[in-house]
Length: 217
Image (cartoon, rainbow, N blue to C red):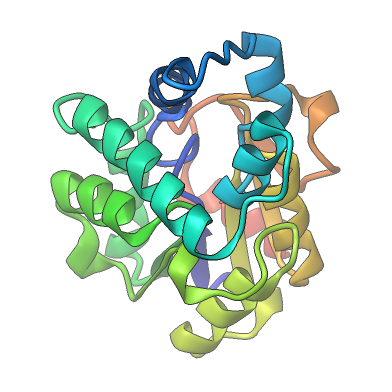
């Protein structure tokens, strides 16, 4: 039985990836680096900043250096995105359906807390989320299931009663590794680029509560 829906944020609630690309372009340009869009697609979308920065800078970035560089890049992103916050088509209406049916809702993102606060705060849905977890709240990042198992624990719901919305291979894998059903949101990747999900959507316009409840029958 469906009891809770847990959303990733980037590419799932809002299509932020193009704006992250712009922020990274500005960040890397300062360092005379110019990754291609193909490289971003492969090594940025759905990845945590420790991986992204280590990959593109060509050495292990961790600890205090990671915190400083991540803060610089995410600050650029928030400055670019704060006037552009816009949910994926149909999301707000679908979210309202969940709330009217008393389904628990949560957000579980690999992004920093400040990004979560900006997006969830701008959309005005924070008080309707029973759990909000960001990169600072976990030790192990996706595809590790920690963020989803921790969300389920906070919600007081068993993993098999949770539905995850994800747009990346690592994120969808994290939901599946947690023993949850997963909807693949095709905002940044194709079906072939994701693990096998229970359902795939382009956006939320045609999605309704009955459709996702059927996944638990």
